[in-house]
Length: 302
Image 1 (cartoon, one colour):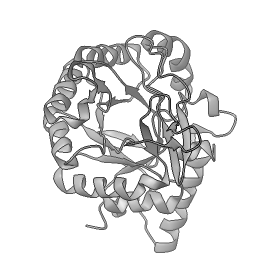
Image 2: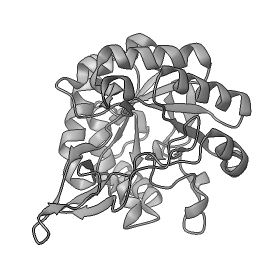
Image 3: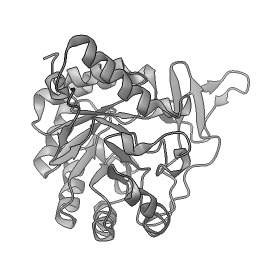
Image 4: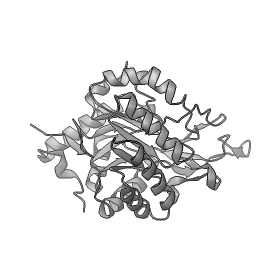
């Protein structure tokens, strides 16, 4: 028998697979294709204190080896989430992770407090990659002090385990990872999308209305693996690795780099059952190499 259970910040997952925020909304939209109760956790789309309209269209574009998105964290807000999505999530026999977004520390803290009070949420993923309106739109995750401020505020507002979602658009990922850990983050999600753009050579204009967007998919996997590898050496808290995972072998690579769990994102747009296929691939690898306990693989490349 193979043991696939992992412990992420005191929360036991039946296996190390979750969804990446923003790729399955809150799960209901994919329910006819996949049983999310089979995976270790379900991570929702970002939830803010009030409704966010998002960016103008077009805001998604395919690229070689991936996709660009400039959705702008569109969401109906915490009230709608609690009323419409949380009942479905509570019924799943898996861990529920809610991605939290905000424009300042107070908003992050308020949403986190509301989610704890609502019950049915096991962990919070704090999207410090959100733009900081007080600094002209620079992401919180690009500044160690801003990252610490957000995590500290959330820590005061809730007892739920906190996962800090980090951006690769930084000079030193280890500096940001250490800042999140020192502020009280219980785990890290890494990485978010890479800042990128695409130009239509016929119209001579950017494809996205927002000009810039986030690059995800297989094209960013080597960058994401590097970030996880470096962070694993710098912090003691568990890491959820993500960025271009399409197969079980991709997931294993992240775990060998130091991830305790993995999140599947862009793969959902080409294969709605991607999480289950990745899980099956992990099992095949473990059987092939005689791995009895999944935790044996964590950081195996170090």
